[in-house]
Image (tube, rainbow, N blue to C red):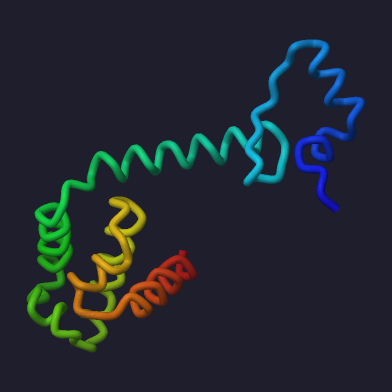
Length: 133
C-alpha cells in the first residue's frame, strides 16, 4: 500500500498538523514504524557501529580473539583452521564467528579465512548461534 511516515502517523492531516506546530518526527525511509521506533533502531545501530569501529584493528585483533576463545576449551588454533569437526571445535568456531561478526564487524570472508571454513559455513553458523539465543 505504501504511505511510510504519512501512514504511520495516521494520514496527511496529522503530518500537516505536526508541520504547523514545527514538531519533528524521526524518520528513515528504510524503516517502517513510528518516530519512537525509528529513533530506537537508529540508536541501537549507532551503538553497534561505534563498538565495531572501536574494536576492529586488523589482523592482530582477529588473531587475539581467536587465541583467547580457543584457550579455555584448550583447542589448538591449527585444529580450528584445519576444519576440525569435533563438537568442541565446532562450538568454539561458532563463538569466534559470532564475536568477530557481531562485535567487531569483521566480514564473513575474513572470518572464514581465519577459522578454516567457507563463507557459507560461517553464515550458517551465525544463523544457528542466533537461533540458540
